[in-house]
Every structure is written in C-alpha cells, then in structure tokens.
Length: 132
Image (cartoon, rainbow, N blue to C red; front, side, top):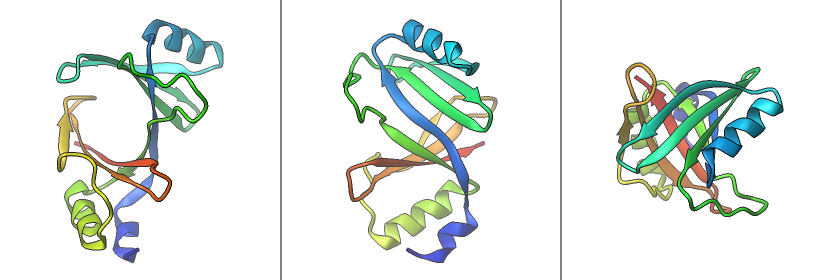
C-alpha cells in the first residue's frame, strides 16, 4: 500500500456495531463502564445512533433492526483521518473495493463528518472518517 496513507491516518476512531435495541445496548455498555458521549438520529437512515467511550476506545452503535445477533457482528472499523479526500484518491489509485457511494457526509458531532468505506480481504468493512 502507498506509504502516503500514513500521512493521513491518525489511528482508530471507532468500531461500529448495529443493534436491534438501542435501549439494551446503552444499558449494557454503561454496565461495563462505558460513558455515552453522543446520541443522535441519522435521519437519512432513520436510525438512532449512540457513541460510547471507555478510555481511548469509542464504539458507535446504530439501531437498524438488522443486527446479525451472532458472533462476528461488528459492522465496521473506522480510522480517523486528517484529509478524507486525499485518502479517497489513494484508495482509488490502489484499487481497493469502495463500497460506499463515494465520500458521504453525516451531521454528527459539532460540524459533521465525511467518510467512505472499503472492504478488506476478509470482507471486513474499513471506514475512513474525518471530523469536520
């Protein structure tokens, strides 16, 4: 992979987990020591969304009523990037399979986020995410 990617990836931003019950998910993560740091609704997908934090680990849960409810149910790993457009160009150049419809925007946090998603060799979804 092009070493230029290292210039833009800062580390893990969050791990995304779908849920069928946001109330149960919030209760569980609170019970194991996480704090809810952000709650919203993704209006485009009509999904409740919550972010939990414990130390430097952040988990995103979104209520899509399609959770697999089986081992391996993590949906994506999000990497924190400084310039999502540059990373998108690198990913295109390297020929990685992009599964999102280009760079997306969500009105999360103070100024929103831009992101796109690729798949890895095991069909894992890797999200490149930039806080705006």
